[in-house]
Length: 277
Length: 303
Image (cartoon, rainbow over all chains, first blue to last red):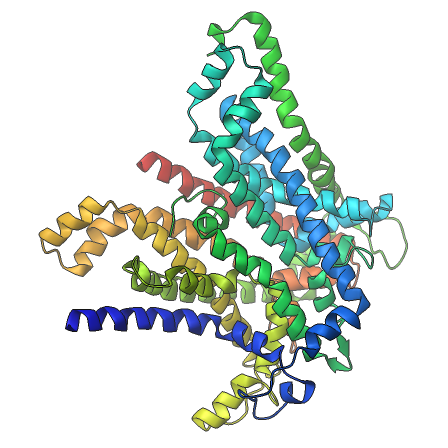
């Protein structure tokens, strides 16, 4: 009996810790169902009559919201699809043929992700201004794709190294073309790597604000951009809008880590650590 | 391996290697190599986008300016290293403790949901996090002050407006976001310890400090070190979180290197100086990457 009690206390503590970490987020979600007066009430109200007005307002009254949400989806999905595809090819090459300079290239790729954002974007900004590429969806997508490549190459190379070269050899000996070997034989075996690379770059681009702000512009703005420049402030900050907006915006990343929890570790360490939690 | 293949295929293979690498290389030359060279060149020039003058060769003057503390960057570097040092230490200690706490929870009901809740902070949009922490920290209608005054009977604290507290308030948010990451790494490190060795330690009745130092540390140290290093690098880059919360203020108290670089390059458009500063940061980040790869290689060799 006491053993069971101890187990349940233990689980209770774990749940409490998890809820404690989630509580600031929970507070924002709660706030998004409050009216303007309830949100600014002192002391803050825990009990109130929930309302969906903030969400309805967001979709109907604020026209730029749909543009920003659309941009967020378009930019992140297309950039990451391009990045994962080209990275898969490069990672296959690095893993199988080990051309001269592989280590150096892998190092170079990684060092880009280690540099503070403004230092990365500064020369790109000058280039984009000079060529007139600023505030252009395609130019921004290509840049985001470049920035997602290092991550994807590192993750995918780790997974490809784990696939035995016997598969390639068997495929080749049986008369398969390289195309066949790469896409039909090897690709299906690194599906977890592809998913991890896809999800974690998606979360990154989804959350990214600086690059969008600097080399994007009004037509390419995503939601972090809008939040950072205070697009939802009239005088003070418009907390009803912001709480509803944030609550919607964090849904995809949270769902991802729920459904793809086993890729979390691989994703957060760009493939250098494997395993499940 | 190539000796087993026909000579014709060898050419073909060289072509294949090239063809596979071209897309990534093209991306890199256009969006990284050329801009980086441009950056290097610009760091020796005086160039402001506001004046409208073409870049003027400046020699090492930009670097001298940095050395002689123009725009107070040594203060920023100091603040950033403190931010990294304190932040990563707190996150590591708390994260490791939580990791040990969650270690034996494989059979917990709703474990997946609990872990999702725990790991949520690190996938949140930093800008959104910063914005809503401004709401939580607010002195008049913020929930944290309501808890402090109502629950603990303390006075109202202006977390982000008080120059003495703002830095720590921002750091606390960073810790809230990233402690779960260290928990994740600890769980991974603990998961890499072979079950047989743990059972052997159990049978030998090894004391816990010994179990940790003899068995767990041996297997888990590399993963933990990678985690600490990744956090160090990421904390060094902190920007998105600070912009919506304090923009580097009050005064300069929360101004980290990335914040100042961002301001100098995209608010004052002081491109020459910013380029020189970026070059300096590039060197720091290359050093950090080298350490990371060194530890990664050591781990591979240890296996």
